[in-house]
Length: 99
Ligand SMILES: [Zn+2]
Picture 1 (spheres, protein in one colour):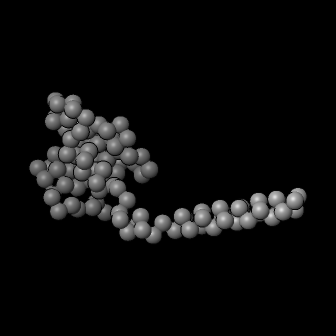
Picture 2 (cartoon, helix red, strand yellow; picture 1 turned 135 degrees about the horizontal axis):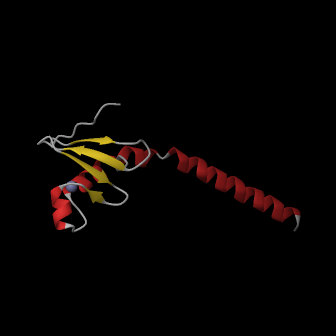
């Protein structure tokens, strides 16, 4: 998997798969490290203002958010409901055995 390219000129790389720390490459060829879990960034604006958010954190959060089509599919929800219905049916069967 290559580096995703965004239309605004920013790129990002996930440093370690499974850990929400990203290197952001800006259009001006600067690199900042965003820790999405801790909500920190190494850019001067974040360091100087320290008001909790910068555009890099915002950018990474948008880029790594689940895509809408993924939310619509949700294959696990169907199987989860099937399991719930099965368990409810089993409870009903057991209850009727003791009725
Ligand atoms: Zn930043």
